[in-house]
Length: 249
Ligand SMILES: [Ca+2]
Ligand SMILES: [Ca+2]
Ligand SMILES: [Ca+2]
Image 1 (cartoon, rainbow, N blue to C red):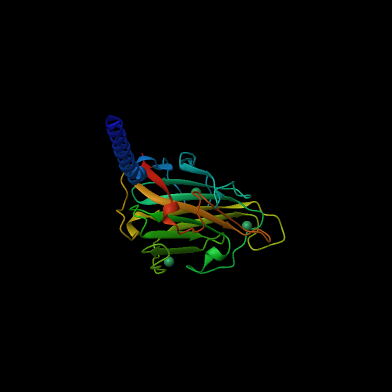
Image 2: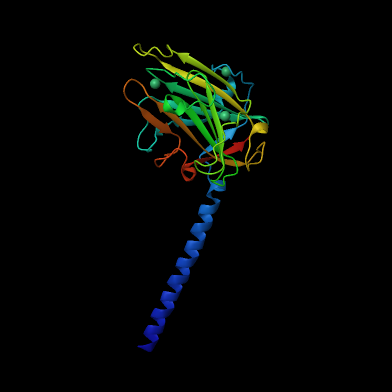
């Protein structure tokens, strides 16, 4: 009987140790997951890119693709499709947004106005993956920019962050004419690494990983829809909901 108890005690001990090892292992796995499994591998650009809103450069054919953005709850693709392509070189991160849109509008005309109240595409970057400070870039279909830096989630917003971003938008349809049928709009964006701020290291090197998310707000007709690359869990600024990208050759 005593032997049986000591066996039981021993097996409990083994189970406890096993649990502890599994816990430590899973904690390590989580900590290193940013480095292990990027959601997107971003290749260097394979040709020059002219920032004119037309995505006809071979570099865009070879760029990383997000696939259609999902509704921001992650449950299904948005009704009006958006796909985003990414590529880079030593100086810049390049993004191309292709947005289907039956009704394209935006009344904002000045940089850093609250573009997110209307139609917009957005990219958020957390270059050092600390889920702390981050950078936000938005472009409206009228080609207006909103850019800001943050010190933590929705904290320390600095609108004076105005890097020399190159941006061009092409509208297939009629901007701000609400009662006809539009086709869509494309955005070409080049973000210079040398003007980024925060705790990241710039420019990135091959193999570096950044956390990021991409969003679109569409307000066609009376309805509205928010879509994203990674599900937002209710807040575009939830840094824990971001995905990861890896800079590659
Ligand atoms: Ca172009
Ligand atoms: Ca700004
Ligand atoms: Ca729209």
